[in-house]
Length: 302
Ligand code: SAM
Image 1: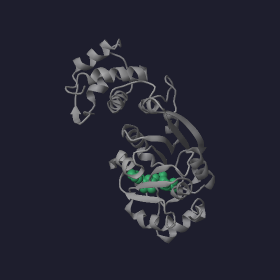
Image 2: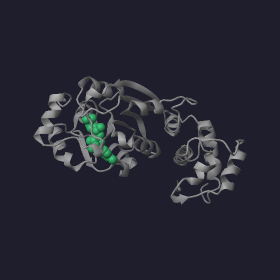
Image 3: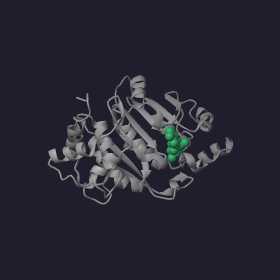
Image 4: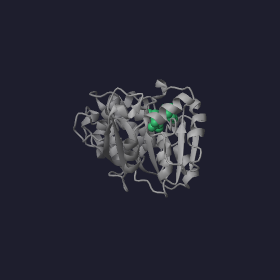
């Protein structure tokens, strides 16, 4: 297998010139050009030849080359079809890489794990497109797929929210959802000059190491995540309004489930909570309890 050769300004510029392409803003393209950052990202993911990796957005294949050199198998999902010929070129010789053309938000992650790694846990590693960081993270958490760890480059400000402690200013839906699933930690702060083009903000590599057992027990974690999202949609408003204004919950196979005000206020009171409570005052354990109580109000969900 070749050595990774794209992790430098000259390697990246050469490929962009060869294919007469430039980074597309609408896809959040900021290509990594810093060998030190790329190596540190792969180190943070603690890859071994036994690992299968899911990469989101391989771009021109820079991080992919590093992943291929350390892991057993890499599946990379890229939305920008114009990059497929580039990837075929830059990843030729890296014979443990499979590129899937598609939108990660419309990709069945569980199916990828089942078919590419026989259902054994995978590791996710990515330099994420910043315009959809939160939807991607939530999708990974809600997918139900066995994921051992997630190591991602995100905006520093998002890293702060991901790792925020309860009660702090940055604490919100993302922090809560992440804490159910994993222990978050910042591996590295990354300066804009590690990318072409340079993003307007600092970035950070964050690792989420999945808990062996979730810290709270809840019947349907996916439903709890939706409740958390609904509650923080209207920050500083009553939690009950956020829950009622959500466009429709997915519970098991049912889509578009709604609750009445009596359902929500009844569940809050039964949980010993003030019906006027706000989302940010709720702990993960309280969300889990509320989710179980509301689930009891969905016919046929037990
Ligand atoms: N991995 C490359 C690197 O580190 O140089 C590129 C990272 S760039 C920040 C984000 C990549 O995600 C781009 O290649 C972009 O086209 C891709 N992307 C954006 N939206 C996507 C989506 N919905 N599904 C899959 N890939 C996406």
